[in-house]
Image 1 (tube, rainbow, N blue to C red):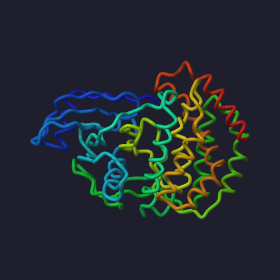
Image 2 (cartoon, one colour; image 1 turned 90 degrees about the vertical axis):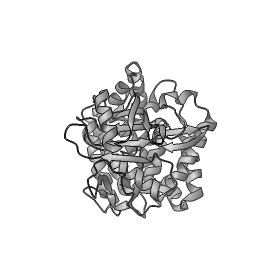
Image 3 (spheres, rainbow, N blue to C red; image 1 turned 45 degrees about the vertical axis):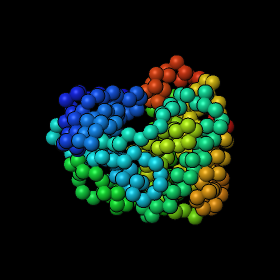
Image 4 (cartoon, rainbow, N blue to C red; image 1 turned 120 degrees about the horizontal axis):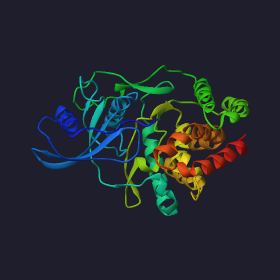
Length: 351
């Protein structure tokens, strides 16, 4: 689904001053792609000019920017994961699109996943290794005790900076049994498949994925999980990761599940199946695990290898459900039929 991600100059000015009354908007330019409202801003402050980002949830979309703001504040307070500092957050407002958040701009360049074919092995390996180190730091947080999607907890904000306290996020509809939660998510994915060109895959996929979920190896411990670490969700300084962006898809899951999903997204996600995109999943996974091993427990690396087939099949099935929307969003309609055929062969080989 496509959302209206445009804001008027007046709305942007009011949003900035709601959070920072002494700031004045100088210039604003929308970023390209994505389902959220995101503007790069130049503002005048009493301390001088600065750059920042304003991010808002479109009126037609379920709110998630307020959750992301709390997660960013927690990560800044509790870890060395490089994320944008939060200037302030607005959860409710009578006339402006909410929630919205103002973020400090960090140095680095954005590289879209459609640039993967031109990205060197060396750069991709470095990005994956850095990502692995930061995932280990994320998973070390004692933040959740069940599995599921996340929600905001704590006070409503009207422009203030989130406190950074871990208890400002919680698991929505928590389930303490990991395999039970996986079965529930698999049901949702299989149901979504029925409305796609891959509807015929669902009956064959269901018994296979159910069996593999039953066979995943524990022990299972819930952790904050990033899930989506597509190339455009990181800033690069040289070849190194200078910031990790876009945390609204974070959930509570097991660390090894997160590692597999992050590796899948960084290797291209749905775009992996487009023509002329090199398959470097092995390179990404091994570099990510190398980085993870430097700061995290070896047991997670071993579980990742043991449970990878199950989690990658789930990722491939989800790529089927998102394929049409993703290729439309980035104007790749001419490549979708080839990508769909390649993805179908991938899933059929896994079944």
